[in-house]
Length: 390
Image (tube, rainbow, N blue to C red; front, side, top):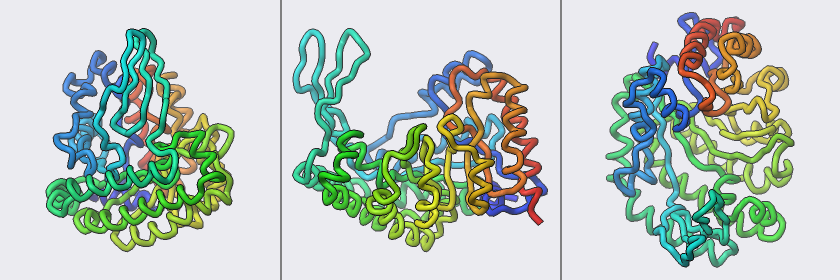
């Protein structure tokens, strides 16, 4: 069974007699791998190797920078093969420049267009002005994004960057996990958290203009990208909840987010995308029915300390798929805590449709020894993947 087949069969609730997919939810935390390099991890896997800078502006938008080094790192640790790719609409395409500087601070425009004040004698950053405040700002940003798309995301660049993964993916040597930024997350990064919340009431037309542009851009460019590669999993980044619940109501979600999902998701499936996942933190139980109505197949990372219990969620929604759901904090507590956490989620593993992984990046408090033990136990429990299926 190839890596691609194993992942798809696991997520398709099949009985995995040869064992289910063994994968990690996220790429590693830089502080963690740097610490592990002092505990026996080859020095090669220092964060500077795993997270190389983009070779050119094309690679910033047609994102493949971590695909090879993180794949190599995970192969070393014994995970199944996966290449992590993304497409980024060029909203963060500004030149960094200093606006004003004093002996105490520096006022700068950052690459995302925000103006921030950086203090020199303390680790404080003050957000002074977002890149988008109103429709006029949006039109300027949109014009710049369109220019960047035309210049850097050409058909030739798309074929060159994503085409390098076509042969190995078709052979099943690895699966592809593909990221895009969602219809809640993206406007939030432009307006700011509080301003975004206010815009649902004060500037709804602005949010619709932004999300319509995002939708149109995705359909145009993903049409070309997914002619070359068809991901087993696509992730929409949508951190829209905290530990007390979602940051928007079900009605607002349906109007400003789900309405665009319902146009994008059928297109993605028509292009061969196998599973549509949403990457969101916090407690989003209230919105699960709305997500499912829109066509979401599953979620990650299922934030345990944020209020998401995959055992309880699966009871309510037996067809829902998960990646993640293992409390990352338990790894730092040692082998007994790791065993106990696997026992907690074992019923969902046995039901299928679930690829266990940490519910966030593994923290530096965890030792490499205990993380290796976690991987060993993960392989053991995945021999029971789908065991309760007929």
